[in-house]
Amino acid sequence: MSTHVKRLLAAEPRTVTVGAQLLADALADQAAPHLPVQWRPPADELLPALRRVAGDRRRASANALAAERMLAARAELVDVRRAADVIGLERGQFCHAGPPVDWARASGPLRGALIGAMLLEGLADDPEDAARRLATDTGLALAPCHDHGGVAPMAGVVSPSMWLFVLRDEVHDRTTWCPLNEGLGRVLRYGAYARDVLERLRWMGEALGPALAAALAAHGPVDVKGLVGQMVQMGDEGHNRNRAGTLMLLRDLLPNLAEDGARSGAEVARVARFIGGNDHFFLNLVMPAAKLQAAAAADIPGCTLVTAMARNGTDFGIQVSGTGRRWFTGPAAVPDGLYFGGYGPDDANPDIGDSAITETVGLGGFAMAGAPAIVRFVGGTVSDAIRTTREMYEITVAENPAYALPVLDFRGVPTGIDVTAVIRTGILPQINTGIAGRVPGTGQVGAGLVRPPKSCFADALEALAEAAPAV
Image 1 (tube, rainbow, N blue to C red):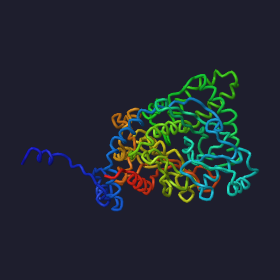
Image 2 (tube, one colour; image 1 turned 180 degrees about the horizontal axis):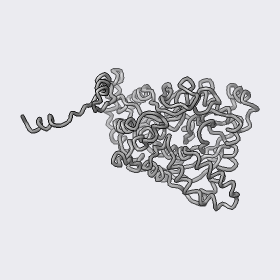
Image 3 (cartoon, rainbow, N blue to C red; image 1 turned 120 degrees about the vertical axis):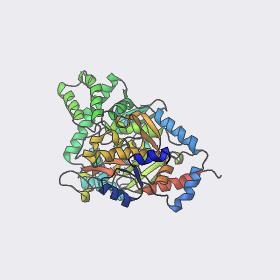
Image 4 (tube, rainbow, N blue to C red; image 1 turned 60 degrees about the vertical axis):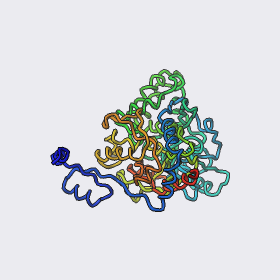
C-alpha cells in the first residue's frame, strides 16, 4: 500500500455534497461533518449563450479592468443638500428605488411612500387625493434613483425638498447621492405616511439636514470608504447592521455640531440623539459608497460583471457592465426571515429597495461571516452566515482588501458578481434585507434573507451573447 493511500485512510473523511440534498440530509441526521455546495448544471437552453459569452475574447481583460476600477474607487462624504439642488428634481417629480415602474404596477410600500411624498410636498390635501392624482395626473413623473445617479433604501422615494448625502469618488471623477435615514419602523421608506412620519421628515429638512451640512463644512470631507473598512472589522456588514459605522460617523461630526454657534444646545442634542439612536443611519452612506464602487465598473464592452441590483417591490432588476443601463428584471420574492410581533409572511411585501447595491460590491449578505450578530435580526445561524460568505466567492471575480473579514483570516469580501459564474454554478447572490408591509402605510414588519430570480441573470447572459462579436 502506497504512502499516499495510507495517509488518506488514516485521516478523517471530508465530505462535500454537490446538489445532492438527500445525501446532505442523511449526513446531517448522523451529525456527520460535510460541506454542502449549491450547484446545478446550466439549463440546456442557456448553454449556447454561455459558450458564446465565455468565448468572448474581450471578457477576461474587461472583467479584470472592471474589478480594478471597483477596488480603486474612493468614497468621501462631501456635502449635504436638498434633492432639488443636487439632482434638479422639480415639483411633481419623484425618484424611487429599483427598476422603472408606474403607479399601476407599484407595490403597496412604494404607493404609500409616494402618497407620503405628495403630502410632504404639499401636492395633495389628503392620502386619498394623493392616490387619485398619482393614478391620473400626467404632470407627475416617476424615475428610478439609479437613472439620476443615486440610490435610496426600501421604497426609495425622493422628492425635491428632501435632503441628500452627496458622496464623491475622485479617482473616477464621479458623484452620487442618497437621502438621510429616518430610522426603523413606521417610516416613509417602508410605505408609512402618518402624521408623525411627515413631522419627522419636516424636522429632518428644517433641522437635521442643515445641521449636518454645517458640521461637514467645518469638518471637511469624511472618508466613508475608510469607515466602512473599519466597521466591517467591528461586526457590521453594511446592510442590516451599521451600528459601528453610525457611531464612528457621530464621533467624527459631533465636535463640529457642538461648536456650531447657530444652533442651541437642545437642537444639537436632538440631532446627536437622533443619529446615535438610529443604528441604520450609516446605511445611507454605505449605499452611495457602494454605488460609486459599482459605477466605476460600468459600461465596459464585453464585461460580465453586475453593476446594480435593485428592487421596487414588484420587480427585481440588475444592470451589467457590458450592457450599459439596460435593466434585466424578474419577479421580486418575499424574504424569508424574522417578523416583528403581530406580523407574519402574509403581511410581507416582496423584496424592495436599492440597498442591494451593498451586496453588489461584497457587503451585506456577502459579508455576513464578519457580522455573526446579524443572524439575530435576519434569521439563520452563525455557521449559515460564514457558509454564505464562502459561497459568494464562487460567483465573484475579486476580493476587496479594503473590507477585510477577520473571521476568514482577513480575507477581502467577495466582489464583482459575474453573470457567467451565476449561470454556470446555479448560485444566486444572497441578500439580507428589511421586510416592508404589503399594505400601504404599514411600515416595516421584519427582516430576512432573499435571493434574486435566476431569470435576471439568464436574460442578461442572452443579451451579452447577442453583443459578443462573432467568432
